[in-house]
Length: 438
Image (tube, rainbow, N blue to C red; front, top):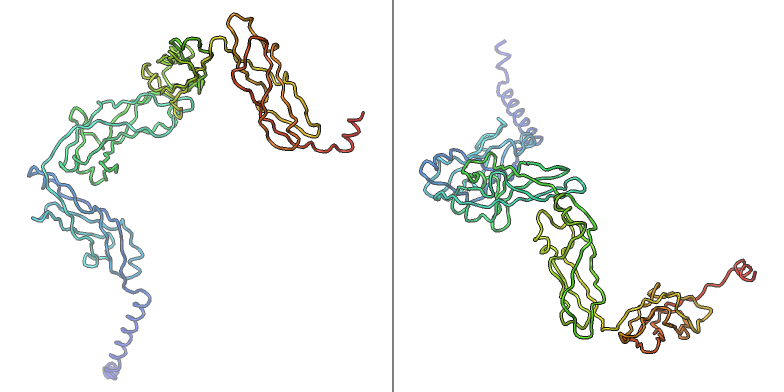
């Protein structure tokens, strides 16, 4: 038996080695060793007390994430994700170069620390004196409340400011502190929780790591839990089509008068408390009168409605409402009048039978006239208006003067015109011709 086991021992050992080599080849072909990159792995800071104990604070001056290069078999790499790694900066290891070496652990036991390369391998910090400053809280509203309502007033419950303590360089970068509240589908006054965000002077929000370097307290110095505050949100009712009223004062130039006032727009949408809206008595009166003092010609004036609403309490323009108002004032000489002559009163001369005509304006012709004040008032029936279409023998658009005949003592201030569009009349069908003959 012993002889059988030891017979051809060299050949048996060679066979074993060959089998092992073949196994290695198969393993390396089917499951080779490779490298993979895992990016944006966040650095976790440990033992921060080691810095605060020496009355210092620190600010991270290098990147807050790292890239890991892992070298392992393909089957192991395929089972890994970013969440399997923890990269730690232990502040107790801070050296004289203000650098903290980084360490990494992996939850997968098949991966050891020597198979992981960290880039960069250390975190750079800057030690500073601790500083505390006061900042006003700006409230940012998102979302839309129930239809027919808008956010009227917002107010931080525990005061308009917060105290922030941290590295001096970080506090110097702060531009504003914002409390964000979501009012989606809100239909009554609410007290909502708002998360504070810190915005730097470039308009970027502080990262989660940067926020962890700060202590945020309310106006009384009480540390805020999870950097949140309570915000009271008041909803105002929205009312549309509120007429705007404008007063005109001053005396026009001698021999002139104010003939009319036109507003654009004529009404406005407002949001306010029920009491404030009722106090309007159904109209918004422009706070500043329009002066026609010394005017002899028509003129326009523009007003910002937000300035008028600043004089009211608990009122504002509804969202999307243009604040600009244009007031057009018509000035006429004494004895001047503008008559609107219906188009049906217009006498049409030399109308080509083969053409179809449309007129613009399509309803009335405005005619400006002047007469002595002592004269008998003129009416539309006293005016004869006619137009000659002899030039409209071909299809096209024509601007044709209107001939206006006035009673004695009246004169035309400016020429009146009509825009006439001529198109060829379509031939009648046989049935239409028979009906026309009947």
